[in-house]
Structures are given as C-alpha cells and as structure tokens.
Length: 303
Image 1 (cartoon, rainbow, N blue to C red):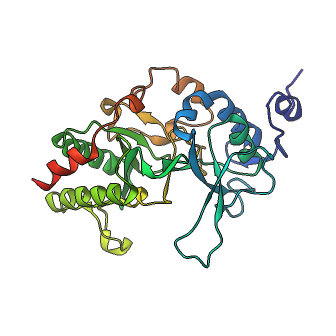
Image 2 (cartoon, one colour):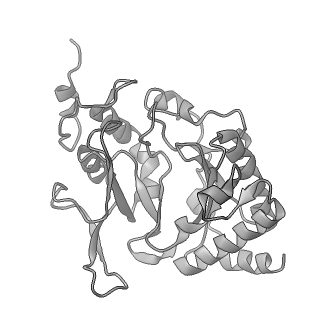
C-alpha cells in the first residue's frame, strides 16, 4: 500500500501541519519530505545547532509566495521549546526571546511553521558574545560557483599562513562558506575585527579576484569576502541546512580536495541526500580542532 503523507508524518515526534503541501513544485518535494530529511540527518546537524541561537526564515508556501524573518519565538512552537532572552543595546526596544536549537523536536516544529533553512549564530546561548568559529562568506559577483571555489582555495592559503585549519562547505547557493573553529575567549567584536582585517589583506593582495566593497555595484564580478557573519546577532546557514532554491539543495560540508571549479552545489539535495552523505564526514574533527584566534591575529598583524 502506498505510503500517505499522514501515515509518514505520524511517525515523527512532532505533528507536521499540512505535510502533503508541495514546497518545491518542479521537483515535487513536500513539507513532509523536508521534515523527514531533517529527522534522518539530525545527528549530523545537531552539533552545529546545539545551544545555538536561531533566527527563523519562514517560507509558508515553500518556493511560492514570500518568506519572512522572525527572531521572536513563534506562538506555534511547543511550550517546552528552549529560548534565550536577549536585550537590545537600545533600551527602548523590547528584549527578544530567541529560539535555541539542539533538539529534533525543535527542528521539526520549525519545519511545521515553514522554516526551510537553519540560520545559526556563531555563539552559543551559554556564552552569547563568545563565538567558537569565524566564518567567511564568499559571494561571487559573477554568480558562478567556480569563482567561489577558486576564491575559497585562495582564502585557505591565507589561513594556512596564519596556521589556521579551515573547513569549507557549499552555501547551498552560488557561494562557499569557509569556517575556522576557534577556542572560546575572544568576543564577537574581536572575531569580526579579525575577519575584516584578514579580508582586507586578501582583497589587497588579489584585487582582481576579491573585494570587500559593501556596494554590490562596485564589486563587479569579483568575489565578495563577507566578514559580517561574525558580528553579534548575525547568522549563517548551518551545515546540512536546506535552502529555498530550485532542486532543494543543502549546505554540504566538503573536504578541501573536493573544492573544485566543476563542482555543482545543487548535486547535494533532498532527492539524493542519503547517497551523498554515505561517505566519511570531512568536518568530523571540527569541534575538536579549536584554535587560538589571538595567536592568529598576532601573526596577521605581522604581515
């Protein structure tokens, strides 16, 4: 007997509203397909969402309609959802009650509310101003993933000089994210300052390939080396996060040997994730490989 959306949804620990709603019309993927993906890979996703503060991107109609961002915990979340109250520097603004990730129940409840990607801060709720990674977001002005791949390899070379091990992943779109796990200690301002200084040096050394220009028009076809994911309250899509894009791609952790110009980031998607995730995890030692940002910053100042 053919599996119905209702019977499949009943096996999940959270009720998924309208499980048969089609989120990706061209591919035929439903909200239930998205929920089942996150349930199947949650052991891989959990280390990157555990104790992390989330910003929600809600797309109630999937690829159709509009999406909107939400920081406050939605009313439709389970009553026992973990949250953290963060007060704004502007005392006139009300404090925000952010959702904290880490459980499958929370993740599936977010899917039920139409959240496709998973946006996480570089800090954890227990130390909301102390990041444990630095992230570089490489956005090719050309729109070509090949340019992002070439740029990522150059960024790796620069980080190697600073004696920093780095990890690459597809953004799930046209770009690449390069992460550096760091030992907690420096605050978000220090992490952002380091990322901006490093990006400026890389751009100055490779002005035809890189830019740190804020203006999209001024960037041309160069790769924008965005350091601002490291600021307090800023987010980046987590490894394994699905994106609201055609073919339903997810953000795939890569070995550096796999960062090639002919790589197609849409090859990692809801339709083939079981096959794509069978191999060894190239980020397996990520959290065991935390490094000193202060030592790297000292080396950077000497360049």
